[in-house]
Amino acid sequence: MQLTANIQNYHFNHILLNAAGVMCQTTTELDTVLTSKYTGSVVTKSATPAVRPGNPSPRYYELNHGLGTINSMGLPNEGFDYYMNYVSAKKTDKPIFFSIAGLSKQENIDMLHQLQDADFDGLIELNLSCPNVPGKPQTGYDFEATEQILTEAFAFFTKPLGVKLPPYFDIVHFDDIAAVLNKFPLAFVNTINSIGNGLVIDENTDTVVIKPKAGFGGIGGTLVKATALANVRALRNRLNTTIKIIGTGGVTTGRDVYDHILCGADLVEVGSQLAIEGINVFERLETELTEILTAKGYTSLDDVRGQLKVIS
Ligand SMILES: O=C(O)c1[nH]c(=O)[nH]c(=O)c1I
Image (cartoon, rainbow, N blue to C red):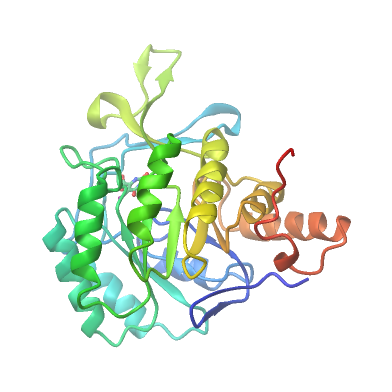
């Protein structure tokens, strides 16, 4: 079974990897994902220039019955240099994604300059969608700000750059963000990030389940699958074919991976279910995906990618 994908001249022998933020904050976690037989890559926790402790706990919660997760981590990370050291020293034949999430346009531009000048040979994911830094908007919902930062970035940045987007919920917004992104030589678009600012209640105490922002946090897992598939499909149908798609959101079974591929995803990321189930989730998902492909008589993901049918 051919379960491979390409982004520019980076080849992936498996299409699964972690979603930024999950099992990727420390070198130990990064190595666990990177060395798995069932992943094609790893993405770092989104980095800021300085080390950040993030929001006060409790800041993460798993809903009952595997429905998903809510988090307001608040961008905790070991700092840009830590991840630069990791990717620079790493000996691997798998491509690596370096995620950045500066707290200002200038912080992002500064980190991109450092990445441009470094001997890091991998892909860079500009996170435009963190919903959990108090007072900071999700840049991806500001089309002018998104165009501005990409204009400034592509004035000097020549390495493979992609963006991590928040979910959109209006057809006009799919049109608007795609019109902005199609102006730039992006290597990929990763959609979706968590659905921002959801609210989960503990029924035993009538209390919110996370402390930051009075309980408001990003929603992930099964609950977001329909929105994730819609964003993958809508952007695949609108973006230049040179811009590849990483599908993220709602993946808990091999069928969910298959559905992301049907909608046009080239790679598929696992966040909440990786946090819930652990590293073995990748073997289970690949096994389940292979069973589905075999049952349908396919020998390659290329037979499936983007082939979602509509009712004519
Ligand atoms: O709270 C976080 O650290 C976080 N949480 C998310 O759900 N998405 C993000 O992009 C980030 I940067």
